[in-house]
Image (tube, rainbow, N blue to C red; front, side):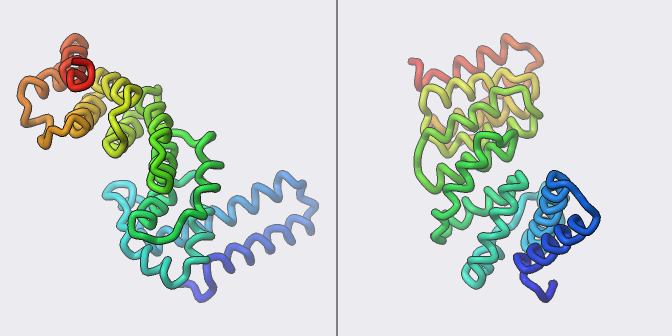
Amino acid sequence: MVSATYAELADMRRAAARLAGLRTGMCAEDLAFGENRVMTAAWAEFSREVFGEPYLVWHDGADFRPLLSRWQDQAGLVGEMLRLGLSGGDPVAAQAISYLARSGAGVNEFGGPLREALPQARGTFRVRVAQALFVLTGDQKFAAPVCDVLTGDGFWGEKIDAAIALSAFAPAAAVVKALIQGVQDDEYLVRRHSAQTLLALAGRRTTIEKVPGLWAKIRSDQSLAWREAGAELARPWTG
């Protein structure tokens, strides 16, 4: 662990970058770029120490439990680092805010930064920011950005994240419609997780693999079977 706090480290690096820029006649745009790199490095260092190696966080998911004790001891520092993570577009920062909120930490201060990040957020980062705002506010309108990711033309892994995330929202018409579209996606795993969320929203406590007829349609390589699966899964809401 470094002896200085991450916020202090970021301040020192930013000041050094600005001084070096002034000495070498860098333009304002180059100075801003240098400062952004400094702030990104500070968040990356903090994230690695708290959550572990980036590859393992991506592969296995972050363990957020150490963050709560860090928040209790150094709320100001953790808050500054999470803001840096949001400004850098890191989904883990938004997930961390959700975790702290669910743990009873007073993190309403992040509502502003999350709202600022949402309009330009894309992919999994958009999903995680919307989730965090939903956790903070309870407002169902934040399902809409998640639906956008599921029904968009992004990477299939991002769509899976969106399909899973929608299980926390109410089965409003727009949510059900997006999930039915997900059931008809070209990628099997997107279809599978969209179907699983529809089962959960309908109150069916099972997995898609234990519903043989539906699972066969989801696994099929025929789009007609996917449409049939979507129609069947939508019946709790369409009659």
